[in-house]
Image 1 (cartoon, one colour):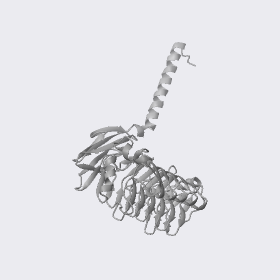
Image 2 (tube, rainbow, N blue to C red; image 1 turned 135 degrees about the vertical axis):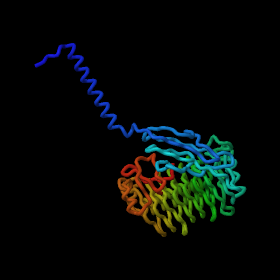
Image 3 (spheres, helix red, strand yellow; image 1 turned 30 degrees about the horizontal axis):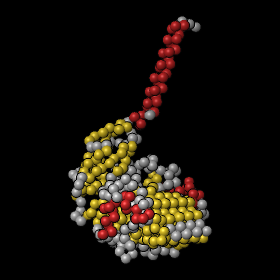
Image 4 (cartoon, rainbow, N blue to C red; image 1 turned 120 degrees about the horizontal axis):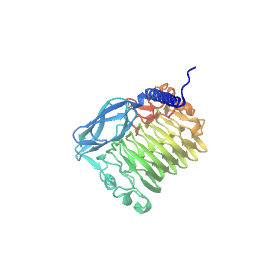
Length: 412
């Protein structure tokens, strides 16, 4: 047997260790190769605006990187959409993200403002809508507690402690159009426990349209017909959402108090509390009312007629679901409290709701609610994506199979 001298043995061992480490690193790099891939990302814009984050031009990112995007319109223009390689974009709103999984090129599209459209840039502009309830409005930026005129119009001290005065009433409803353009109205406060039809908008009549709007961190209290976004809707509400705390004696919903119009692609997350007619999304969906491709999650509490999605239904509910905790004593359902209309292809989580029954809809376990087969089997327009940060806007619904509940491809 050949004997290696001590000093040479140490060098030999060190050399072997170095070789093994090198091999391990090479193998590790090969195994991680997909994460070391780099892709080019070309960003541009049409006339009328610019992409301010991360800027415009061609950038390089590692595979899997989530890139933030912000588009800003110039005076006289508004943001329309993102076009190009947008399969992994989180939403087609002005501020969004995209996940790099290939070489991408996208464009921010802008268009001249339509004559007659009125810009909303602060709380005073929003308040002025009540002077022209048939106008066409564009929200040009987020509104919150730091935005001009908040203290005077929408704070806990505004209007002698009553907070925001709802836009539109039964005898003078909103009949115009309001496009949020993906922006949010935050920190809305309303405390009108003696008033009916309380929300950001009080009454939206036929012809009225509200779209692409978020109402976030709202604190809304009224007597009857109360919603975070709209108290009573007979028009169209789509691609909108609300979050926060909504409270009423009768007929209260996280998004709407009552609906006799059309609501689609919308959701609520938060707490809804009342005595009767308490719905996670809508208090009362009346005859002619349509609720589709929408959902609710949170805590929904009342004494009687309580539903995770809709308290009382006399209209149509389809392709919707609820995961909220539902509490009540009479006519309580995981999805619908009392149904005299049509409920189709809609579900509730029997575990998170605490309710084994509903007057309409199909109860599923949490695992089943996070299984794409539950929804594709009901002919939902849904596709699985790799993680919650990815959106496939070619489908109404996305889901991370066996991980998340369905989420709307247009939501941020």
